[in-house]
Image 1 (cartoon, rainbow, N blue to C red):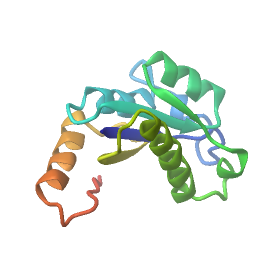
Image 2 (image 1 turned 60 degrees about the horizontal axis):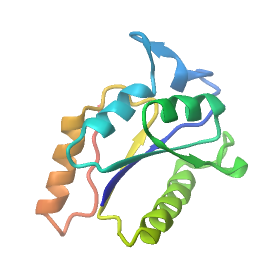
Image 3 (image 1 turned 90 degrees about the vertical axis):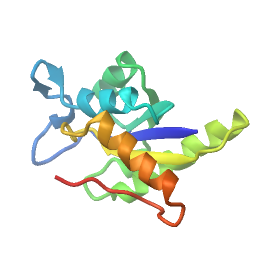
Image 4 (image 1 turned 45 degrees about the vertical axis):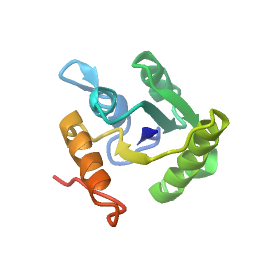
Length: 139
């Protein structure tokens, strides 16, 4: 099973509320969420957050919620730690269904430029090249 995990927390210092800030009429976080939902290669989308606003938007757009523990939602917490926590939650849920994670796509709620085509292309590269363990987009 291929899944996407979006990371977004409430307490941005540089741009408070950035993940829910409107961009062209939608909260910023909706763009990467839609890209993940529209990707042919993604079967399920999760959002890891501590924010009630982000949870509400994610739910409205069909994502599953991962409640991020307070210690992983501080300005000093590393994104890697939130990713590992999210991975474990997803892995456990998927295993309870008798499935496994084949590919995990990591996105950030403020990544407004990601497209479903980028996600599908990255997953395809990984499928065709089993010796490659990750693909990263940059802009």
